[in-house]
Length: 365
Image 1 (cartoon, rainbow, N blue to C red):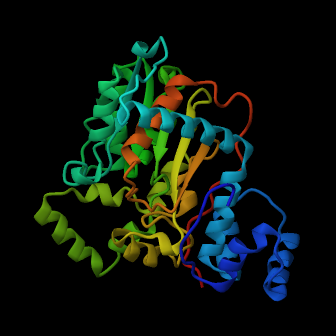
Image 2 (cartoon, helix red, strand yellow):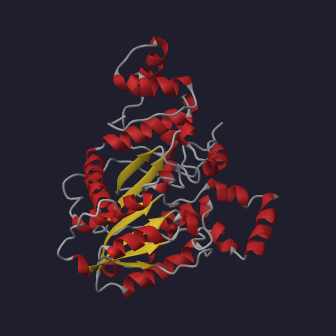
Image 3 (tube, rainbow, N blue to C red):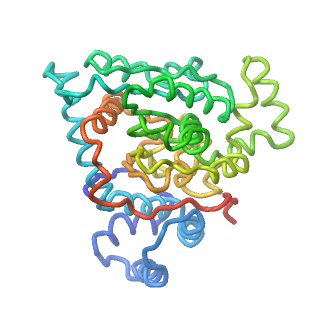
């Protein structure tokens, strides 16, 4: 699909036909072809919202809706350009790190600092890469200034956003590239779009949002529902974690916070997004994906659209789930950072596809 190979199972016959036949204009099943054709004619391409995607899930299946969303992202002109630059940088990173070749940097690279906002429980989950230790080490070895933002690993989004905002102001004498993952995506968004004025963010040139929980996750709602919340509170007490982190990513609170965001126009936003089909899921993501499937297509922790910042550019990783279990993920993190370090005029030629956020997620009937 759009030049990307896919080899997996899907959740329905019509999703398989859509992927294998319809998108290649092969009429091998007239009835299935007719159903898809009728849908295309009655619902021409438009802004993709949560409601629009949920309608596809009801009519066909979550995997069908996932394929459609991935197709829109991959075929968008702006996203294709971003992806081609990313792939070129990934090839450069591989040659430098694995092949020993020199990794050329822009002349002004010393004027930049890359600030990494770590994921939730990043010390507890360090083995998963939540603290960005490997890409930070690689980038530092290449001569790039990198800093880990010392957020409260179990703290709430608003509290950590204040820490991130202070770090931005502290480093404003340099040009800043921000990199976030999972929950810290919501923290960076709040810092940039709510806490700081546009003038205070002038030093921020780019934000790389990796699997952000920008609008929270229904999993947090379910974890805090009765009677499960008592077991969750006991677990957090035993582990020494703050409940405020979990409470801050509930959907109602996250959506209210998201509505306040006014992202500065000068900040180049790149969404790096995992898009798995049902057969792609790792063991760690399967159970959560199954729970979220009632709300629509998801990556095993959040709904796809709730992880994207509107107006940004999106690089879709077909086949990965929220935990990004990819042997090349550290090199890809390096490629993402070096991409924006080398070309900060990426957004000047073309505008991104109009993929917008939906309303509050509700379970599919």
